[in-house]
Image (spheres, rainbow, N blue to C red):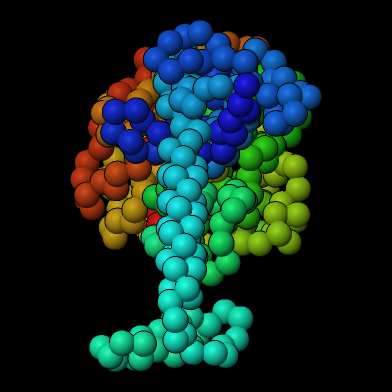
Length: 418
């Protein structure tokens, strides 16, 4: 029986070979290639720890974790919908072993030829260990001892995989190369969805609405150095006081957008936090609270926090679009100029008669996360966040499906990739 190591490798599409970052956070079984039959896999070569149900979770960087299997070299990761091929890279190791064997044969032949040459009369005396007897001219027996040039130990180059040992019997002086099976992590800017990447919060009852003005959001569990966190918050209020529209934010957060004074009483804002280093990550904490400062701004409220990766940390925001207030009719939002490499959009809806219907950006954007809340008195609030990894054209009009009721606010913000 042979234990085979399957190194951690990025989840890729079996048809196109492209990375599948959308599988981040999903769990699936390791199955026999092309089937749905679970394989038996272990955490270690000694088979001390079997992995229950052969279930692995795709990591934050879209990698299928390392494991060991017995007498098998090709498997699949399968979650019931998505299939990802997993290769043990046995072919690379076989090539290395074959190259080592060829080198040993060549070395043996060279040693036999040298022994035959030494048996010829009139070989010059002397020489030192490691030197070779070399012809100087075409004359018979015109030779001398010289230091070898180039790599000894046979012909060809020995290729081994990163982390593997040089095969036994490899001669000193053999040239060898090291290869890695890892695929570089994708660097395109994107806003991630799913558990660990998105958090939401909303008021759920009348008492909570009247008791305060804060929207408190947990920090996504997967956040790490190099990320940018984006927050969209909204609050309904009957107040027309300009001071009620000023938002407070935790230390380190930067305001991207907030309501100007003397507009309608739909109070919205967008903030960002750049995780530049380990200190910034530690200072982030486990949650962040955003609140309006006035005394009359109690009302329905909701917020969404999302994790963005591969953005320009020095200047993540390219442009902020105009906020659109469109009542209960269909709206069009203009993509701002200049355009960056990724577009982030939000809609905020509230109603006094039940939960608002789900408005969506038609075709152009994908839903990342949404916060819904009923206040217990018949009203509701909803903050929805969208993104498109293909940047839209500047000044393009993006249509939004209207909700069935309530007042809708919308905006597009363009972001810079690294």
